[in-house]
View 1: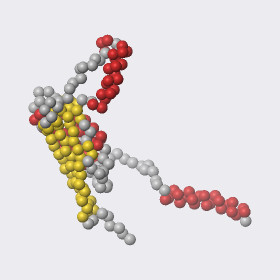
View 2 (view 1 turned 90 degrees about the vertical axis):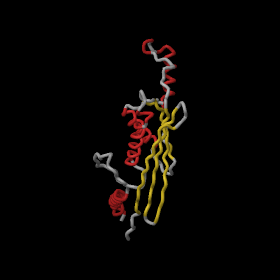
View 3 (view 1 turned 90 degrees about the horizontal axis):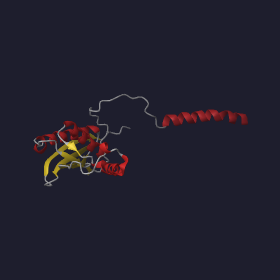
View 4 (view 1 turned 60 degrees about the vertical axis):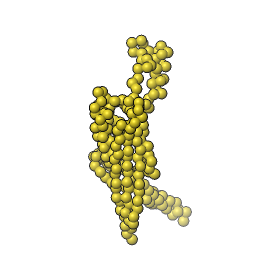
Length: 202
């Protein structure tokens, strides 16, 4: 009788492993490259296609703005991270970086790297301490002052009617003149999406 019990242990262990493997989460092991410009509405969340649409609109508007397009030389801009005024978690740093990167590539504007000011301050002190040879030493007081501040915010509105869900996003961006504090350029991009609840089949 005891031998039979011991003989059943490996069999039971095998079935436990099989059941846990079937019911547990599976890893994604096979993949392929996808087109990042293709629109795929997999869920009702903000996605990369929404971000790209908004960024493209803002970039075209800022480059076409007379204060930028007709400037004798590319204006220098400080960029502030886009504010998230929605109830949804959205990677605003990625959106801000996308807008800044695309604007730099146009050659129409230049950006002050505000994020690295602490690093620059540390480097100035290091140079001043005599650690760097004279010809390559960088002195204070040669940074370029910004002409504009680029800032903005994302807002949203969600409505549910019956089985339909409507999601509205609006991104507003402003280019503020550093000397006059006036908003010399502004643009907004709206995105509206409709989703339908899936029917539960019994």
